[in-house]
Image 1 (tube, one colour):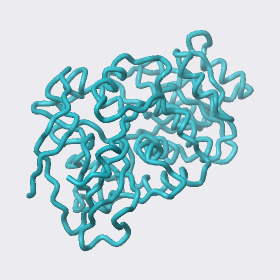
Image 2 (cartoon, one colour):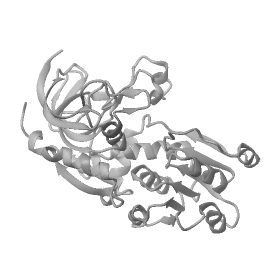
Image 3 (cartoon, one colour):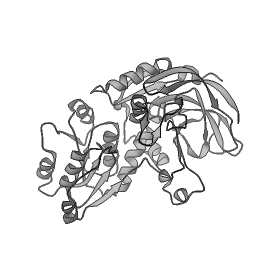
Image 4 (cartoon, rainbow, N blue to C red):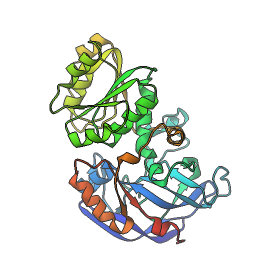
Length: 356
């Protein structure tokens, strides 16, 4: 394979970042494209690796380039690629499964244990000027979708996956527990999917204020209001048709079970780091349906189309944009967990226009 020295944001080890040259493969196969990266979003998983050096079984054992939420411009195409050309503005799905696996054939390739996901040890991420990526997992951006929005397709696709699992019917009511980036994006996709109203709760008022800027989203301050009784009151004692648990905590799961209506659906989106205990009899007596979400599958093209339609505006969620040379400052800010921050992004446009 072809290796080249490229500037990148490198996680050297837990708590240590540097911007330096690193050997990265940049050979373009027949079914690949080479992309000049323009914008990369900072995800909670990136920050978790920075802070702790591991997420569950995925441990940073050697230097790793961070970043997996990206958009850019195609600068080279493989000979078999037909749907993209040099100059195409694109976003990239960061998880590449084994195309011969049973999971891929069943359309649930997000569950493929062999998936190679950007910035998940030992796979390098995309916070570097150029990357090579399979064309099959690279999607053209319409002119109406900016690079900043294109770099948010990845987290928005999680919301799309959650909404699809919920099987929303027009006129449903929904509760989203957790008002972080995924929570707000899930609320937006639930609205776009047909919900008449979406309630969103959190204990952080500043994040709720961001969510409240959107028509159709009703904020609930969980530090002041008992959420489940509030939902019961608003739904005349019936409960929410769908509850999206996006906080990943034991209290949130119990709130979801209490707030959902008989025959309703709870979608578990947040990743819990603790054992969860809830009233199974309460869940059974309502005959609720439970769904789980792990990333997404076959959602990128639909997510791009929804953004292009104008039904969802993600721009209010961008809290700050940093230049690539200030990437470490951006990650240190992410570590601060400012209450008003939703999404931080890094632009590499100074590099994107220059060939390596």
